Length: 280
Image (cartoon, rainbow, N blue to C red):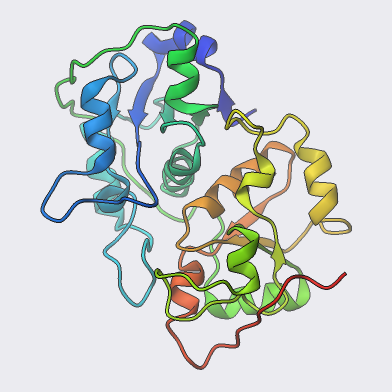
């Protein structure tokens, strides 16, 4: 079963699913003392009936030694899903603005939490509005779902396991190539990448319109030749890496997520760091 859904298919099935808006900005984040950036977009217009879930506070734990977007507490995810009316067998569709990075994080967290049927609106809200489908500014009342979250349904690795995968399997770095090579970033104390990791920017798994590439198997052949087991993905803080985990799932490749990603790895001065582009 595909993990993606088109705008027209969602419009056809909208009465049968719970729709969750997770619009979010990697660069602007949350203004000091203000509401999430995505919530302002949501209030201005969203898929009719959609609920808003905040990535920073409901799909991630507080930033700290585990990275900028560590895994959230199970109780936090459960409360968010119940507010949206989710029960054990509810079908859920998530979307963001366009690129499906935040939506993929939501997909991954909800699957990790034990939901079985979660799909991402391919192309996000941009695809919905570009298709001329109705938009609403009405916010639905909180519901009272009874889903019980059981974390652990998706594979997760920690820093030590990431180092082992880079050495013995295939560890993909989903950040832009320049950050992999060692370009300084204000987000992290140390530039570079996990030694042995392979550069695989999330943008290389997308088409120009922000949707997932239709030739994902071709992209996999370019970066994963000879690998089918022991595959994992990391990025800056575990957001865009989830996008790549979803892309791989679409072609039958099971990949683990390193949630702490570079934001955790780079905090420990004892961990090895590599710089420069990939050889060859």
